[in-house]
Length: 522
Image: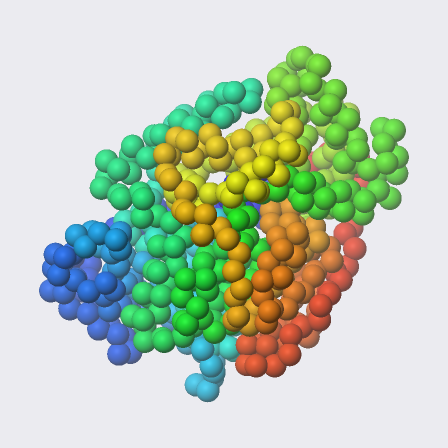
C-alpha cells in the first residue's frame, strides 16, 4: 500500500523524510524586496477578500542557497494570494509558495513548472534539506533551465504555501496497530482528528482538491506573467499536471511525466504492484538460488505470509503484523533500486526468523502509512480524487483479507475525513492533445507501469519511454545510465524528437543473503 508515493520513499539513511513547519507570515511580512516587474502593495494584500481579484500579483524576494556540492543556486522566492474556495465570493485568501530560477538562455521557450509528488511533497523543501534529495532536485532544475525558466510550486497548505496544513499532535504515533481492525480504526480516527483540527483553525477543507491546486498553478503563472507553461510532474505531481492539462488545456504547452498517476489511479492496483514485485523477484532469483526451498524471495515470503495466518507468537507479533511485514514491508526495500539490491537479504533474514526486518517494518510502515506524518494534505487531496466504480469493483475482486490494500485504507481514512470525492467526470480519461513525454520504470511499485500504458492511449501526441529496471525514480536513473538522455529531453522541449522508447539500466547487483546489517545495506 503506497499512500504517499513521494514522501514515503526511504531517504538515503534509511529513514523517512518528514515535512518541516513553515510559519505563516502576517501582513508585516509583506515588506519583501520586489524583483523584476513583479509588484504588490501592502494595502492590496491586506484588503478584505471580497474586494480582492481572483489572483493577486506575486510578492517575491531574491533567493540563494549553497548546495552541499558548494554550488550557489540563485533565484527568487515568493507567494501568490488566491481564494481558498473559488466558489465562495467571500472566501479568505491563502498563499501559494513558489521559487523561480531563470532560464540559461534568453531565447528559451516556455517556462516549466515543477510539481512534486505526495501529495505533500515539496521541491523547495528538498532543496533545503540537503543530501541526496537536494542533489536530485538541483540536477533536475539545472537540466530544465535549458528549456526555460524553472518554477517550483508548492501545493496549497504545504511548505512555502500558507497557512500550513500540518496536523501534528492529533494521534498517538506509538499506538499499536496489531490487527487489521485496529489499523483501519486508527486511520479513521486520524482523519476525524485532522478534520476537526483544521476546521477549528478556519480551513475550508472542501477546497483542498486537485482541481483547486490546478487553478493555483494557473494563478501563479498569471501572476508571474506567463500565458502558457510547460509542466513536469512526478508521482502525485503527474496527477496534478494532468488535471491542469484537463481543466486548462489552453494554458499548457508540453508535459513531462514520471511515475504516472492519472485521473483514476489514486488507489493503487494491487495486481499491478504484485506484477512489478514479481519482475524484481525474477531478477533476484540467481542470488536467491533456491534458498529455503523456493525459487525467488517473493515465493518464500508469500509462503511465510500464508503460514503466518495460522501461527501465533512468531517474532512476538500477531499474524496481521507478520503478513504486513512480509508484503507491505517489502515496499520499504523495493521503492528504490538501492533497496531492491538489499531485498533478498532482508527476505532471507525474515525466513531465518531474525527480528531486525520486523523492527524496520514497525518504524517505516507506521511512518509511511501516516502515523509518522504531520501533513494532513494527503487526506484532503487523495480523498477528493477518489475512485471510479469500475476501478473499485476490479480492486475489490483482487483484494485479500490478510493485508491492507489501498481500497481498505482509503475507505477507512476518507470516512474519517468525510470529504466527498469529486464528481466522476474528474476521473474520466479524456484526450489530451498537448505533446507529452512519459517515463515509466518496469520495477516501479508505487506507480506501476500499467498506469502509464493506460494513460498513453489518451495522449495522441504522447511518447512513452520505458526504463527497464527503473524504479519510481525511473527518469533520474535513466539520466545516470544514458549519457544522451539529458540533451534529448532538452531537445524535445524545444520541438525536437523524443528519447528512445526503451532504456535498459544496468542489472541490479544484489547483496548476499548473509547480509546482517540490513539497514546499512540501503
